[in-house]
Length: 119
Figure 1 (cartoon, rainbow, N blue to C red):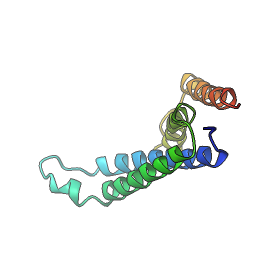
Figure 2 (figure 1 turned 180 degrees about the vertical axis):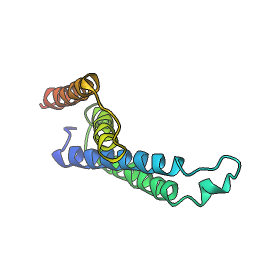
Figure 3 (figure 1 turned 120 degrees about the vertical axis):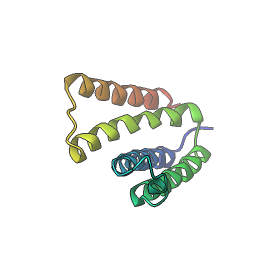
Figure 4 (figure 1 turned 180 degrees about the horizontal axis):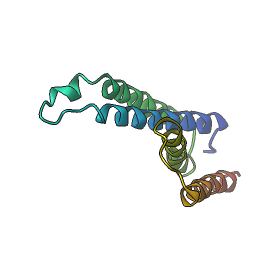
């Protein structure tokens, strides 16, 4: 079965949601009081993050129905790209030259897999 283009779009959307969920978890983690574990269950950042992760998982299942696992799953690596961008913009984390080089290699690798999988 050949991978359909829409499946690649859906999996990329899923990776954006996964990365967004990770950012929401980070925002929630900063508000956890470890001596009061109820702060996890009442932390709206963590709750929203869990729902975003669930939506991402649902999209992943939809995407997998439209293509080959060996083609689609490497696109999950783009989560590292989104997290780097979101971390730099939201948390003002330093993303140095080596990290950007790594992001570039991820993009190059995912693109190579996508191009190499065309029949």
